[in-house]
Image 1 (tube, helix red, strand yellow):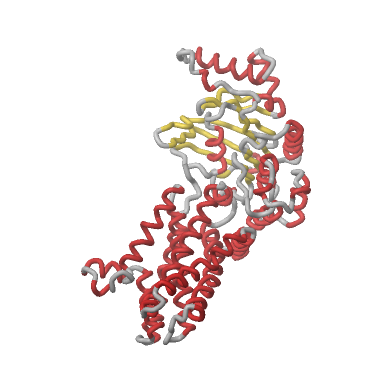
Image 2 (cartoon, rainbow over the protein chains, first blue to last red):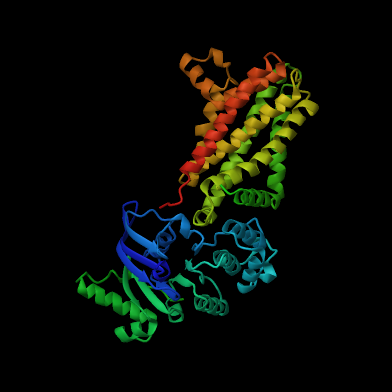
Length: 256
Length: 244
């Protein structure tokens, strides 16, 4: 029964931060085994949504079911890999020491640590202190930790930020492989041209989901050729529907 | 409670400090050097014999409080705390892992400080040297556990730093260093009698001057131990998996 549950199933999620209503009532269903891109401008609530799924965000109300269990429940902690937006690793430990520590917490084996170091292309810097790594290497070390223990759901907050194009392509290939092995990946980005690499796209703006489609279907629906144009078309459409004053498009998504 | 995960955390924390040689050096010698400075200031007077034991209570306590609270603060800042709390690591396991790592450092640091005070600065200890070590170590562990409590309780970096004057200074002021507690106004004396640092100061003075029975000292060590356990339990309870 539980094996057939959606990877993520959210109804009426409301998150407040101070006086700000970050997520004003969000519904979302993510199927299993896909690479799902969560796209939207910076500040639209992507990280908050991801933290709600992982169970580290205080939520005001709503139901968040992850792999059939309530988000944040103890049983899920073995089953989710989470990569925060800024690399969360210990700067004063080497890459291997970082991974070995988290492996012990999760219960992953030493050979698995080696395999993940190779998979994330960190072998050459495995013995270096994390503080001495480049931004891209640090981010991959943080990703490597999220991969430990073969999690069923990977929640990756902007894993490709600041990476050179070659590395970015390699990472998206890795994500596709992991999905082929059965994992579900929720990958956020504010770079629209990464959209084409996902099986499914969720477009977010101002705490709301304005579209959830496969990339080809999204272009077809909006009659556009790029994800960025599709995003803009959707914003215009939603604004016309709500007859909101034009000019709120200052949060225009930026491609890199 | 899983001892494997506690020990993994302890090893990891010690590994971080091992990579940072300067911190290691500062941690081990600063309290000893401060005690040396006090001894030097009062070279030709009998004052050091009086306040020397109090300095052993004070410096390792403060240093361990600061180091522990800053270390857990860094954990929060780097995002690793959020990551850990999303993993199968118990909050108690996390706090105990830290307590063990810094407890071990506290023991080494205290041994250096006491050894320096006794054998280099010539602090006269009339009572048992073993008891002096026991009290001093309990006192440094107290600093560690209060540091853990402060950083678990705090929601921001600024709050953690503010806990230093808020939690530590009153204990110093009311502990009997500036004025013997018996001469304080009644209310302040009663408050001072409940603060753990007061008991460390009393016990260390009693050992140094050998003017109390061993049971007097063990009761005070027990009192400090209760504070240590309370702080660790309270620290694990107040640590939040969900934040805003």
